[in-house]
Amino acid sequence: QVQLVESGGGLVQAGGSLRLSCVASGHTFSRSNSGWFRQAPGKEREFVAAINWSGSRTTYADSVKGRFTISRDVAKNTMYLQMNGLKPEDTSVYYCAVDLRYPNTYVYTQPNEYDYWGQGTQVTVSS
Image (tube, rainbow, N blue to C red):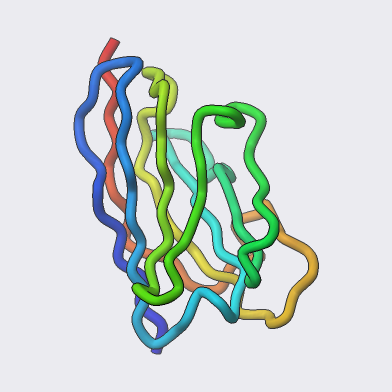
């Protein structure tokens, strides 16, 4: 059974940084495309960033491009989201997710293409 556990969220001032972590059990990130999504109250879940199964390709939402970096440590079976230059509009619950289709050459940005999700971690950016 695949389990994903996020951590690293918190309260930060605008312009600050946070690093989110997603630890997987029952699964290895080297055999799936993986991503980060976020959902603010009253809004739909939206794509943030994704990395392909080999780690050779990353994709970002335009709203975070140049500020956020997705990465992973296969040895630790952990995926990361480094968030710099945070803005109040980045305030959301952040979720990690995996797409178990392997090998999948297409990295999806739609939430319904992902099979397993973590419980989420709250990120709050104050102005």
